[in-house]
Structure formats: C-alpha cells, structure tokens
Length: 548
Image (cartoon, rainbow, N blue to C red; front, side, top):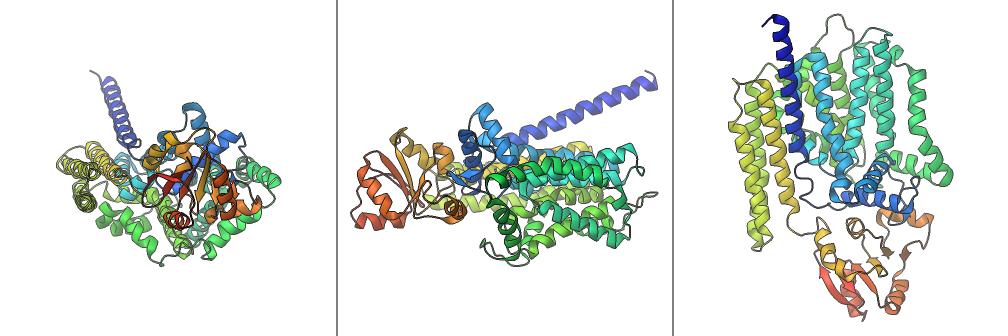
C-alpha cells in the first residue's frame, strides 16, 4: 500500500472513530431525560408558557396561567412550542431545546479547541466539560441558561476565531458575522445581559493587553445590522402591543434585578465562587496551573491571545453575577465551556489527569449517592426502593469509568470513558432525586387527580401556584388570593383568571363540577369555616379537593 492510500485509510479510521465518539456521547447524554418528572418551579414554568403560546396562537405575548409574563425573551418558548406542535407536549419535548443546545456545547468546545490547540487539547477539553456535574445537571433541566450558554459560547468562540485569522480577510468577516448572529440569539434567549458580559470582557481584555486593534475587526456596521435584524423585531412588536413591556423588562428584570433585592434571591458575595469550584470539581487540582498558563501563553505571530480572553471572560461572568443582588446557581453556567477549554489545553499532555479526575468524580458521586441512600433508608416505604437502586447504579457506573481509564491508552478512549461515565452517573442521581413522589414535582399528584377532572371542570389554585400542575394537566387554573411572580400580569389585566377569596367561595358553592389545589394551611382554615369539598389527593405542598 502506497503512502497516499495509507493516509486515506488512517483518515477514514479517524473519521469513523470520531463519529462513534459523538454517537456514544449523544446516547449517554439523552438517555435518561424521560425518567424523571418536571421539577418545580422553573421546569414547570418553561414548559407551560410555550403550551399556552401554542394553544392561544399568540406568539408575541408570552403568558403564564393566562397572564402576561415578560421576565424573559421568547426564543426558547418559540422553539418548545414548535416541538409541541410537531410531537405533542411531554417531558421530553419540554426539555428538548435546552437539552439539545447544552449537548451542542460539547462539540462547540471540542472543535474550537482543536482548531487552535490541536486534537489532544480538544479531547481533554471535551472530557473536562462532560465530567462537570454542574454543567450536566443544569444542562438536563428545562431552564433558559443552557440555551443562553450555547449561544453566548458560540459568539465568544466565533469572535476569538475572527481575531486569529488574517486582518480583514474573508474568514474574519464570516466569523464575526457568526459572532453577531449568535449574540442576537443569546439576547432572544435571556436578554441584554449578553451585551454586558461580552462588552465588559472585551474592554477589560483591551486594557490588560493594551491591544485595541480588535475593535477594528468587529465589522460593526454589517454585524450590528445583522444583530438588530434578528434581535430587535420581537422587542418592537411586543412593546407596541404591550406598552408596559419596556419598563418591566429592561428596568425591572435587568437593572432592578442586578442592583436591588426585589427578587429576594440574596446570597453572600462568595456564593458563585463556591458554585464555580463545584462545577470544576474533578479538575480542581489542575485549575491553578491552567489559569497561569492561559494568562502567560503567547501565540507566535498573533497579537490576540484567545486563552487569556477566555480567562478574562470567565472572570467577568463570575464577578458580574457575584456583585448582582439576585443570585441563582445556573447564572454562571456560561463560564464553564470557556474554562473547560482552558483546562483542556493544560492537561492535554498529562494522560494521568483523566484517572485522577475520575477518582475525584467517583468520590463526589458516592457522597451524593450516599446522601440519597440515607434518605431512602429513613423513609421505610416503597418509595425508597427506586431511590436506593439508582444511587447504587450511579456509584457502579462511576467505578466502571475509573477502572477503565488507563494512561497508556489513547486520549480519545480515555476521554470517551470519562465523559460517558460521568454523564450516566450524574444522570442516575438526577433520576434518583426525582423518583420518590414529593413536592419536587406535581406529576404524581396530577396523575391521581386527572380522572376527577372533566373538560368542563372549573379549576382553582388557592393561595399557591404549583408551576408543574398546569403543564401536566394541560389546563390553566384560576388563581385565588395569590400573586407571587404573576403580580405584573395580574396588575395589567385585573380579574383575568383570578379571584378573591370571597369570589372563590361563592363560585365554589355554586359550581358542582370544580377541583381546587389548596395550600395546606388554606384548606385547614377553610374546612374550619365549613367550606364543602372532598379531598381526592394531597402531598406536602398541596391538598386537592373536589366539589363533587
């Protein structure tokens, strides 16, 4: 066989192995999403808004329980509503958009790292990202953060690639247009925070690097036109239809959320630092060296330092949200893919790092699984069994990964074993967490009460709003003496799908076909007042009562 034929054979073999790698990762990533319920509150909310959008035919004004809901832009609602229309509402279709885009962060990080730093660094970066328990858990939930992270990471990586190609070349223009496009989709996913994060990172980088040439490579005229063409129309149309939108969305949901405690999500300044360390838990021994290398690394002939820029971006994300007066764990998800690339470049030449990370991962899985098993043993009922089984399976999968990683074998194989093992182990723990019927989800509760609800039954939610009830029932409920996060919608449309306690009592007495979900204390209080009704189901957070 001549050298040319041998080269083609090697190339085909590499393509085959690469294809099998992504197939194996996809199977591992998507294998368990149908095995655990939608969790309260966020997963229920982001499953219900698209359902109501599809049912009403109004794709401009998002609604939750029939009320205007303007906390976030609509891209994920649109995508999920389209999936509902094509395949019907389900747990899988509710999660599909965020789940798919979180998974795509893996090839996105892999191919960016391979292009700039080679195949070994790319496989290492892939393993770092796939083995992050924080990235995996958040990526498997129906939240806005996974999709936002994908588009923001795509914008970030496209920008850095544009800065590493010849000045004013066709490649530079194409990469920058990709960056502008991804930034627009990030804005439509979660709002204008993307502009603050990307803009601050660019400003800090230019000051630190003393390199302002990057501003001349942004293709601002063409790029900003593309950005506005994609991002602006919905904001304009929704503002014209709903005059209260601009003040609520831009001032209340961005500036007030950042500067004040109005959302009551106050945490200490070190909150995200702790979460960031957990997110990188298997790789903490390599973090310091990776940061040092990223800071000092130079690329001969190229003034732009992509790793240093990624490091600055990660620091900006961590600092920005640490300063914010509103803190939730998923906020810092966008820093994980860039840091995975930074660590991947560091450990590419250290094959023993995979085995060490796998041991740390096994210890982490065992601690969490142990907690779940202890919780199972304290239950002394049938609900403990699935929790116990999944906890044991998680530990077993992590152990198999540890003992199948060998520093003397190929980097691709070790990366695949660590990635698949980590994915499956942490997903097993997610299934265990969602297995026992509890207040974590209303699925079990709705399964019991569904036979008691007819098409014409009046539905009420009294002094509570369980976010997972409406998507599982595929019905909205009339709110009784409750505001919560629906306060804005209730103020905009007083009386729409809501009632006072006195109004509810009159309607309840007059309607023989009605079902109400009560906050337990509210039901206790009303039974003492003589309110009629028959309890048909209940859990720690809701008592369900039928008028019949």
